[in-house]
Length: 223
Image 1 (tube, one colour):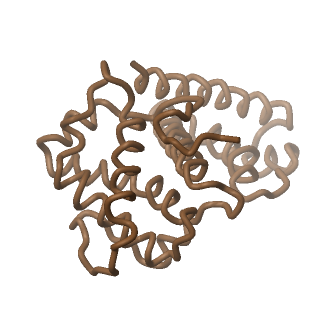
Image 2 (cartoon, rainbow, N blue to C red):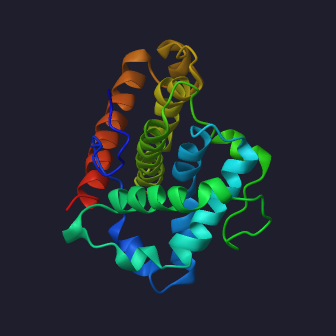
């Protein structure tokens, strides 16, 4: 049986952006980015605590208002003392113990966080996930989203727009939407390439870059 103690669970990798945390301690703009980046992880946890979307959203807003912003959690994060993920889990556990039973629905927001029903639906956790499993899965999603964004920007900066389009159509899109990948010959024809082998080679180039980018992000977030 898996432990319910958040400080004891181990992740495959951490996604702490230490440069962002350092800036968030003093910069409202960086703090807003921090809130926007990490709220889906907290929301996923509360949803799997048998809470309805609106109640989970209220607790998520309350957590960021009271703990992350009110107590300046970013200023307490130190790479030498462990990951921000572990600190966030401990703070989240304590917040739930202190406030979950007495929480009343409130319209109070952080000023940087708007959780409308459409936005909440995008980050709805899987039904079979336990609360901390939902937290960890959303955290992993955060890492992958950062890798995809950086890869797309890297391809654009290096004149690899067609390479990216092929990768997106053949690999990323089907993986994201659980659909069958398009035929390489069809893709080659659409992009004016001289055959499926050329399309395959271009996709391989982006795959290698994706692995490199993902490792860079992991390296940036470990102590």
